[in-house]
Image (cartoon, rainbow, N blue to C red):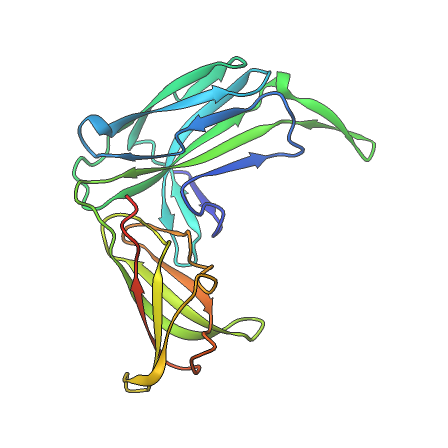
Length: 265
């Protein structure tokens, strides 16, 4: 089984376009739509379609495959192959300039999952000899292929699934630059993903016995929450974030309360 690991931040959010090999050359390119989709595990919405359209003036070959998603505490994403969970037709296509192709993706996995399952739909351009161009680099001829790679998001969402955010831990942390930070672990104990946006984090200083200190409560600003804003917390996952220590609070034990936005389904 092939597994791909992506560093934290590379696949943040729902979608991405990764362009491999540079410089990027005009000629063969394409687009994928939509870039994200929510499936039901059974019924009509367990099959959905995607459109791959040639956008260049040269033929383009594209292959499609799906991988599952596991995200570590630091945001690193691991992507084992998920070929047994889906049927893709066709899995490989060759498009003439301006041509488009509809691709059907069908879920054939668990028809009654206990929680939402997250996947990546990956489309990769397969180099064609016609697309190779030669450039001069320090007097050396180099063959260049333009390779576009789209990474979309798929969710298998059972009915009634919903996120449930909570704070797992909140402690003082000192960065490599010896600045004070608040290390916050955000947990999603629910059954669906949640985009971390429009959050409210309230931080209260406490004493060693856990009692709240008077006049020692602050609500973090949007600027202070930059490390969290826009991240996607999958069902059953936790993420660790480092936030600048609130200047209004003494460095020490704290209590953090999170108020999420409405579910992002």
